[in-house]
Length: 362
Image (cartoon, rainbow, N blue to C red; front, top):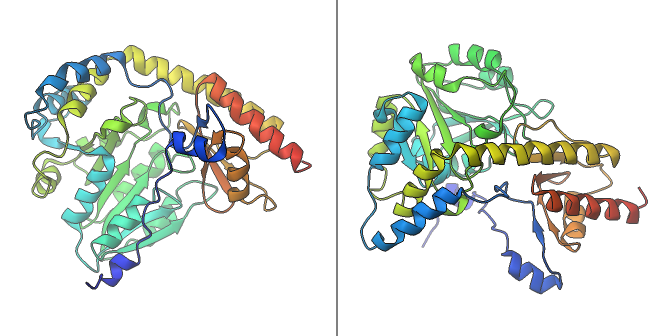
């Protein structure tokens, strides 16, 4: 069977091996995984209890509309339930938006590097990605605005950005939103929203309440620690949500994910503890990276982006750390992305990196 050219051009996502398999292959034990920006504290105990209690009912199909979680989110963010759509992680919501609003030949503007899923999904519908290089690791909104054309249907802003951890501020986004043409939907992907401490961070829901064509994506995968249950949500104009609902599969979020997310949303204590662990770990890692003479970008997330010297390809550093039992994520040929973990995990990364640099004579 012939595969369409626009599908052949997509680079498939390459999943990492399970930790247990890497340990077996490399002959190491107690490997530290700092590659996927997961919450090192795990999920809220209340979320675990809720999921465990719901297990006896998994012979029944899930609530197809996510009634209770949708209404809890509406109250939490002071919006109408008609402005909320649940998804199998925010990835599915990106796909629903692309499939709803783009046809072959349409364009989507996005930063580069940014979340790789944007490009692959746009290509999958026969659309054209318009990548705009970052400026000093940040979205260059002025340059992105110049690339918006009559064919543009979607604009993606990952804020904070993945993989760099940087943000754009309220003033920058407000100016950009005001110049957005009516035929273009702005997708504000805020997967790391709960980790942000910068007071200048944009009020994306404020733009939504003003009636702007803005779709805001949030997730329970990161700060809430429910990555394995795959549940996120979109907040947007009711007409946008209605259109996306037309192609959403009836049972796209499962029962355990819904009840765990609802419980997690109500556990402010666990979220506070998560933020503190992240802030303390970030301060430690930033200080140690400075001590080791390694560059880093300012992060508003639970990971740190480390540009590497030209003499140190990311693949080489990744392999060296892996053999020392520390798993990080190469971010292109010349950078690493390191998740902020627990105290011992962060220390293991620093020790492995220091040993590698010492071996390299730096």
